[in-house]
View 1 (cartoon, rainbow, N blue to C red):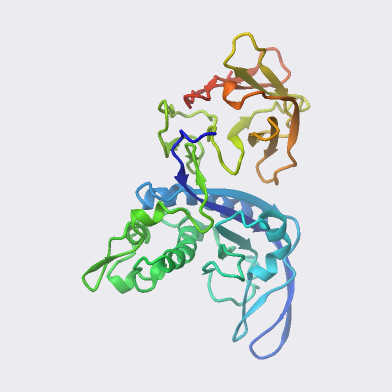
View 2: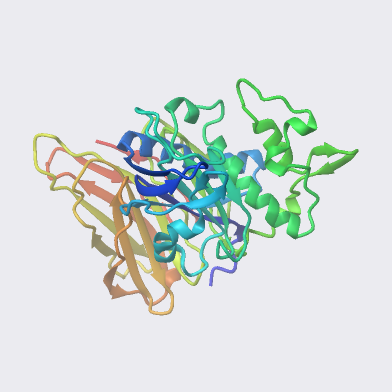
Length: 411
């Protein structure tokens, strides 16, 4: 099933955002210290916004060969332990995030794991001495076979580097380079840290991105030889060997324009514009599930209680069959929401979940109607009605069999 769709190798990533920390540690002189801090929501949002740039940045820097699909998780539990690096320095190691890692990534599902952690109180200057703003290690038994990277909180200006998302790309490349070096690729000395060693100068407009581009396309010259990650290596997928036979689209930082990362059977069209649009990943076989992910903007009126409804309508190819209508949970707040829909081909049952930004995904909800044949699905329409007769926002039909995406129409 889905074998006629070209499968793209991907790196599946898990991002764990910790907003609070409550730990004790000893300084290099042996003095006991205690640090308790909670990040402002704006700090978490800023860091997470830059992480969301990683998939597109990796794709651009690799000239379209690196595909990252990321899940974002906001962790309610404060960090309560640190791992010593020696000399009075500490970091957040895989051991310190085990509860969340086991909960969200225990089944060896992810190629890469990223952690945002509150290292310092930017207002008072207090903080935990560490080995750097970002730290990373390659896939190993300690990491459960995934690459692992941490980035601490920092001033807003740090996130506004010439290339937004560069810290995450940099740390990710340490683990990626180690993985491909183990596959026999010749990597330049220092891998992601090797820019200045090979004559590169940090650009005022692009940061170290020119070096990362050469590293990710095997064009770093060392001792008269081109080194880096060649296209053939990217085509081998990540640590887990995940392959995703669907088109992948990523929002840019503002989510108001789009970059199409794949053209598959029937062709894919995407109209860019100033209005939010539905992000479609398409149907295809991936871990024995057929799935679509969409990001939708829910606009609620301030003068009435939230009472809008989202409705998924799935048409079948047989015109004599009635469409499947599914009313999703009533949105409780305005803003960006993620809608996921997937079908288990074993049971032929449909499942969905809907959640707003800054919240973790809920449990799957099952539709009572079973599908006789998943390839009978023809079109998808998502409608949002805010409870007022004069206002209705409707997404035009998406042809699942041809993967044609239409522009959103907003009332």
